[in-house]
Image (tube, rainbow, N blue to C red; front, side, top):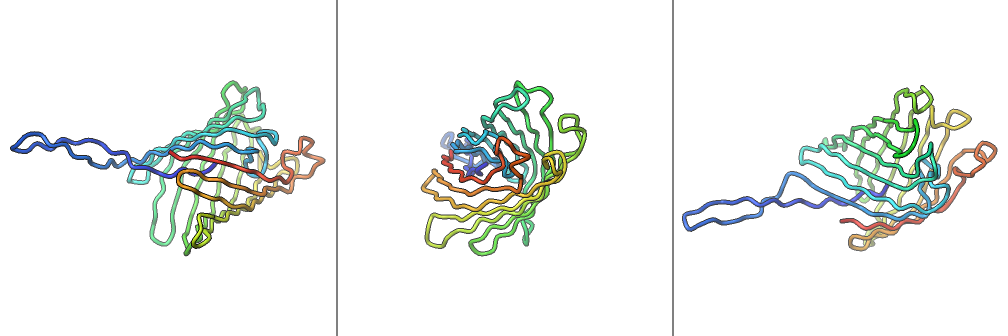
Length: 236
């Protein structure tokens, strides 16, 4: 999911003076952001959830100056438990603590029209900016739930975004390890990606190489096979 840029939400306040009413614009403590994207393949932790076909995705996020935030994200997917759409609801708190940036929260994955496939996770990330590089590492944990086979799941990830000085290009990369309910037939899996993004005003164009260690014998639909994912998004 491509992160959206934030935009301040102004509110109107009336300040009364001796000569009449004066209206002034005061910035709110809330930031609202939204993004609409098209991707050639919806990959989640290296696995294609759109059966290697294009997907349309959209998000809306609201954040308070305190760091508390909430958001909703949606995408079409390949049929999953009877569902053809995924809707993610998230809430959390993020803040710069000086040396590092902290982000903690929870996510609920909903599949409208699906049967017994909704589930939830909690997460925590630590980030650090060093020059043009933004580094982040985190853990995402799904407690044992009926809809994920009465077992738990742990996903560990590291991510990097490095801006190319003097250009609107950012290089991106990620590496992840998953163990548990979504680890596949072997009980665990690795995934990685490498790519770049070009930003012009509110439009972002991206290209990524994505791969996993899931073997074809356990993946007849080849949803974990290496592939190149193109994306285009616009921020509001």
